[in-house]
Figure 1: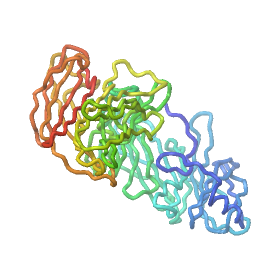
Figure 2 (figure 1 turned 90 degrees about the vertical axis):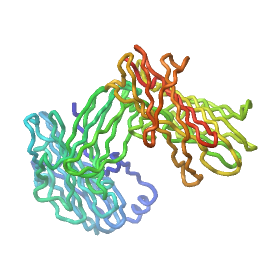
Figure 3 (figure 1 turned 60 degrees about the vertical axis):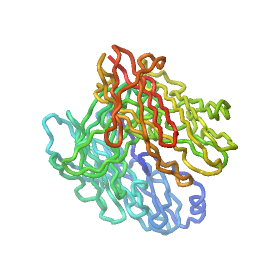
Figure 4 (figure 1 turned 60 degrees about the horizontal axis):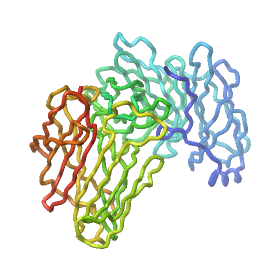
Length: 528
């Protein structure tokens, strides 16, 4: 069900930007030598109270004022923009988006009149299953104030036939919109123009669209409800940047197909717990598509595992950041879940430091242990998903992951990334609930990776000499070796599945110097 939202004002990165009177704002207000009143009239000529956003063309200074109220300003040129929203008892009401470029000196008054608005009309050679009008999100932007016009904008959304824009040919303005038709598939079109056209809208053909398929699996997440979407991300930011089309908001597993105008798009996923909290999801890499091209965006595939952070050596310390320890490989480190972990550094039989940490509610968790001498060290990490206040789904997969790194420190003062690896497991042939068939054999693609940890720490290439894989059907009490073969730059393991339950996976990666990386994911995938 769609809920009526009020207009969007000063939108940037798909979030409302608060307007505060501090710093430069306060100083400019004190220096005000002129004033502006913006009156707003509805589609029947009556006054309508709206929030008017005002942007100084020269500086980008932003102001917000209620229509009909006088705003003190320094003399200069401004853009005044608003969404004139009028409610209705029998529908979503109407939105009329408008803007004026105003030279302010002395006491200035202008009027934005919704009666001058032109309907935003879009057309698509739609299939028979699309029966309703498209939903349209539209906004007007201050085009020349910054390199991201959508950060200085006002807009709203409505059904076609209830959304209007007041034409204005000024080159200081941009007008952008996203239209979405819904049927068995969704169809999404975006368009940006300089100025607000006299006939806003456009015509689109399905044959000129690209295709995005969403595959949302279940079992791996902290909650089942997935709100998937696509956001426009043009290579050069304009008034369509971050305009968003909802793909589907439903319990996993599900699939959905969206046909979009060619360009660059940002897939996204928000995972919602039963108490309404947004508990996960994220933003996979951007996708740039031409007409006729297609790709599939997956969310929630098994196996979730450590994503990025490796130990850092130097300044007589071993440092580890306990972030991204259980995450969706299709999303990346930014889409990882919060965890609680125990980290232990030892040398031989001596424990150097043991610490329990969590990144829940903080991004500053860090393990740091001082070392005095060269030699072989062992760093272990035991992480479990941790999110107070919610109940995890029964049988959640990838609930725990462990790392066991054994590496040599040649010089305690030399800043380098430890010569160890992270493993990615990707089982093939699982169903949409990340289940393998009972008593079957699952091929698991295995890759051993390393990533630079930042510009301040030396990163050296390390080659994996051998990769071994084990599986467990009893929660890690016993382990069975899997047959492994080297395929290209990765490996494939053949895992024999039990009659029911879940499979844990363990890998061991070694290099030619004897450094060893052992990674284990418990409940990696299910068997049914």
